[in-house]
Image (tube, rainbow, N blue to C red; front, side):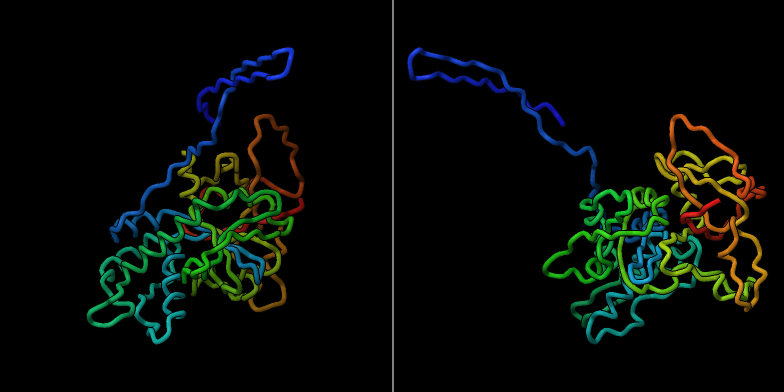
Length: 324
């Protein structure tokens, strides 16, 4: 609320006895202090900026979510766009190798900006134009999205951002399980939130790492877990003036959000192809908690201090509800 001046109010009655009222009214107006920046049309700058920004993808069909680099999301959107266009070859948009950090793919994408995605000789639609257009669409959704809290998650439909329907796109409100309540705060600090259905595996274990159990390498469905790579979490922590460390201290991910690392979520899987799974381990699923000014901590027997001396350079963790 901002002061918008004063108004003098006067009223005179015509009936006897004559009455007069004089007053002063204070006027206020709503003003937003969030500044939106106009996206530039520079392809190189887009690659650099989007590789450092983060996005949340919520799979409503399988009830699980992912924290990924925004550049990786934009590239997937480009592939979805060509699949939705009639008569467009699906090999026009470049493919990149699986990666843990989007900075790894900048060199691969940088020389491919002038690759024709569709169109004829006189009217080519280039890859750089598609990527810049989709980024502009995502920025427009950020300006309209509501803050997620409680058990409500707000986002925009993935394919609406890609195909730009003539009717426009409406923000979606989804009810998430209580398992997701502790990580919803992270949704409010990322650079984009999109909703889709049956996306598949966005984050999986790297090939050749010795992990043989398929169930241990895949994020469980229908539990509203959030999988996040360490480089994505590191950038969120850097925005808060910190970083990732395994010294036992909570890691600040958002303004009032802390990651309390417990156990060793990067322990080696010993299950092979058996029916057992790592998801039963007490130290695998992590949690985010809200920062409080005054807090009394009670040691929990089932949750031991982190034995990690250093976090790995790459990897991923899963956030959800856990009971000590």
